Image (cartoon, rainbow, N blue to C red; front, side, top):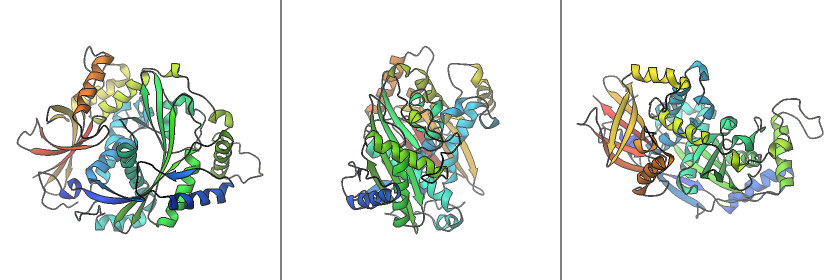
Length: 437
């Protein structure tokens, strides 16, 4: 891996803003609507995303922001908090999942601006890693658009494949099998589930025509979950196309259908995924989605404190910290953290972040990667729920937007002579990259 001279201790290719285009137009919606009708025989309400006011929007973002979002979203696996995941202590597995995407794509961006461009190496390598590469950038673009433009406040994100582990959405989504969208974002007020965003993220290197077909398939996927009583649900499909060395996004919203339309499209999609053509017998696979499973309601009384505990466990893992309070499930993680001096503190204005640090050898120089969480989002001894919520409110007060990233200078307590550029998110997470000689 090779970087040019660093600015502020950081590779400029990762800290310099660049723009990518996002299309969300009625023309695109009509093309996708036609594709869905051709496949299902049903007309679906597909429209531009209202937050993207223009047909073609230019979105400015730093690669570090995309990397932070990709790392957070791809680690939204609530099942990893359980001991034994991948043969590792629970939070050790989650900590690994939180960091892989950030480190995996450090080399992916070129320094050329104002457009956000991929590096020449990335453009070449993706030729034989098309599916994986395109899918990951689809998730990165989708996370950026959902968290920065569509959500109005920080929300929990859950990978749909692990939604059964989630105390809030699990009861509502039980029985979906493998035929489902990619992610759910949701908000709560006390014990009430208030908002749900259903997301399917797509990506390809083939062009706009392939994107239209992918978006049509995504429309079917976001229609699988039934509406949750008492909560507002939005169904979003976002695609990313890697055209040459540039990135372009596509975003559409699906209106809430009537139960008959939604059920038929969801069932047809499940049959298609299972390899069953219309008129054939239903598959015997356990992945078959029944209408009863799709209709399972969620009771607000079942929204329990486990959801908050799990979300905090994710944040502790992102910071490389052993969780509190102590418990036998996390003892292996605590021992691992005590054995390694990997936890640092980075001060940004009046906020302190607990961080885990990884060093990547670049051949005579090292790239230091810090991922962390604001102390206000971490439980403290004697904490009450009111104390925790008050600290979170203080963290978000000075931000440029309720759900936006902030890019600020910071200093590590372990290396106070080094000035860091730190990107932080509204849910308390941070990322810092710096070059060491």
